[in-house]
Length: 390
Image (tube, rainbow, N blue to C red):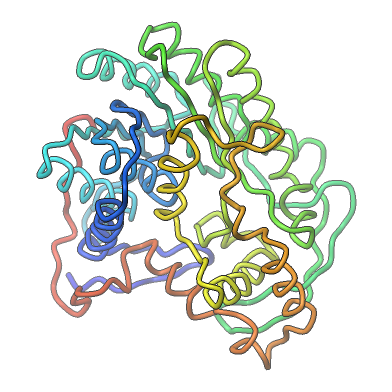
């Protein structure tokens, strides 16, 4: 079939297997080209199929020669439907890793469930014995509990409505938007989905099963951002969940496993595309950081995390024991320029004030579109295979 992008809302409902493969290879080639620290040799990545999770898996494998187990929740191709991008990314990563003599196995299922935790622990025991690092990179809109209760997260403010600029990316129109506050129940549900409860359940289950090595560490990902995004993010319903994630890191550490929050840079993801105000901020940020030569994607961020911040001697943290990969984004000179452009941005000056093309390029690349060297007019077999455990 000829596979073209079909966008609905904030997601693309198709994905291109050859494009995903090419983009995974780009990331692998980047890591191969960089100096390497001495890092963990057995790594579990929970949420391993896209974005920061995928980049974490690639970095661990190709910086440290690590054996990796990835937990994903993706769908293979079926009939005239393509697989999800995460499925194609995982198939490509496994193929490259195996060709390079690296252990790489994947479990496909709901990472929140006890069944997938048990299955993952069993695979670790069988093949690796223990792991030295656990990356927790889940980004799900909902979580179903063991009793069948489903919680859904919301992208809202807390306390008061917030009005600021946003962008209709499809039509390239800047307008004002007012975001209403979440109810207490919505905040609680968002914390249930995106907070630290499940991360701690993974670590507790692995400790109980004896599959964490003595030197094991764990890391989860967060974002803070500038003041203009705080009502929607740091101080909003998502921010309350990230506060809970941070509290969980302290508890996990206190109970014997060093746990870090890595505060990462704003990037185009399926999640960030859905947050009002944030895509406009990201498109301006891209413009400024590219002009200053300090723009990074997921793979550059995860390379710095593992090779410069976490495993190159003592961990490099702020006063709250957080790793700050947003250090380049939050440079005062960068933020001052972003704020100046934000104040005057409007529909008629988007091309000079923001990198909308760069935003769209990153969005489509999430789904395997726009990769160099791929013929998107060619017939392509949508079926790809992910390993024995998926």
